[in-house]
Image: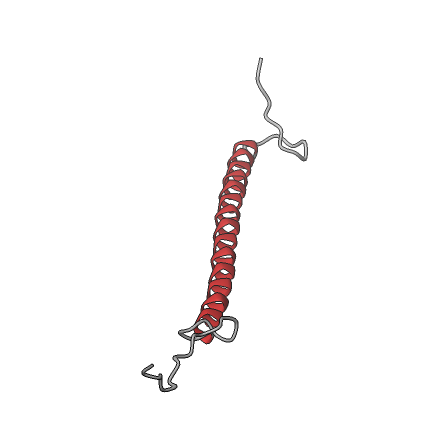
Length: 88
């Protein structure tokens, strides 16, 4: 009793083991590309979050620095009384 190996066209030959090898290569390539896609997705999301935090932080820094040393116009700054005082 002989075992007949058929390829996908129905012809006998040794094409089938090569087909298994190419299917394995494509499967390995698929997993590799999915892993690369996941790493890139994660990296771009982390970079976008960092860019957003830097933008918000930069805006808050500009607001902080533009208010000045005394808090800007929102706070009343005490003015010293320079009028001469009476002795009595």
